[in-house]
Image 1 (cartoon, helix red, strand yellow):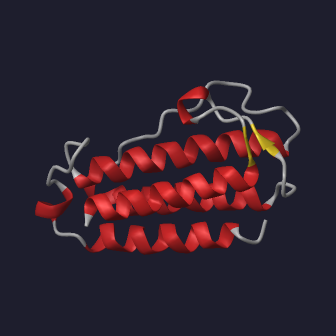
Image 2 (cartoon, rainbow, N blue to C red):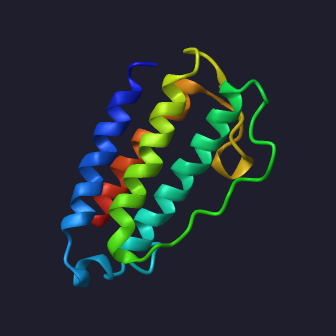
Image 3 (cartoon, rainbow, N blue to C red):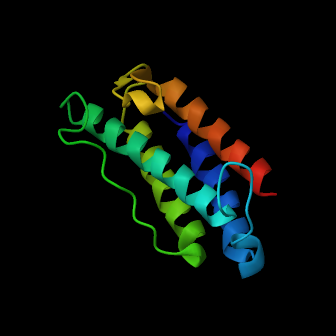
Length: 134
């Protein structure tokens, strides 16, 4: 899925914004989150969960054999790096799948979806977080 490169690019741009934010902005509250860093961490966690599900689909295992792993909070100053890692993991996992492969997302992420829909949702979530965090 060559379009997955667009996810890596979008995540890199947002991660760079978080990396360059001063502490006062990183720790500033935004709607729905106690801080911008928390919003980035929440997005990174959703991207990581989707990547885990996509990797399970690529392995032919029908999804992750265990519940989604908890995404660690490495602190406000690591939010950009954590976002980049999770986004690149999802882009790589989607690239390895056939175009219409079914990704067994957990119900909190909307349930099973075709790989292009997972990519579209991830791109929309990155854009929404970018708009939220200014």
